[in-house]
Amino acid sequence: MSELREKHKSIIEGYYYACCPHCKTTLVHGKNGTDTFIKCSKCGNFLHVEIKDDTVLVERKNS
Image 1 (tube, rainbow, N blue to C red):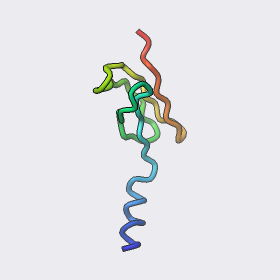
Image 2 (cartoon, rainbow, N blue to C red):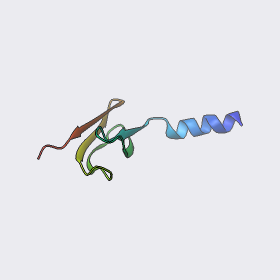
Image 3 (cartoon, rainbow, N blue to C red):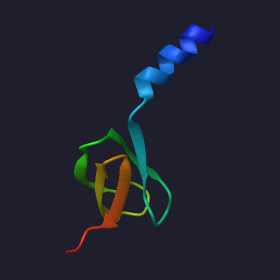
Image 4 (cartoon, rainbow, N blue to C red):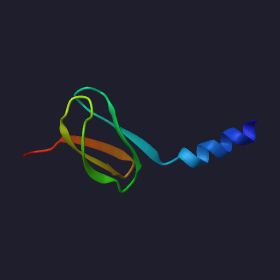
């Protein structure tokens, strides 16, 4: 059983979740190098999501 847990950890290691700063809905699951624009399905805001150097940055898109 312990071996399966360790195997699972290695699969998801390095992945991060980005959430909407306004309504807290999960937007995307990604890893370092992710740089995208996404529309929140709950509140409709357009957001810029960047995952870089183990840091998740979510900002509202300037129009």
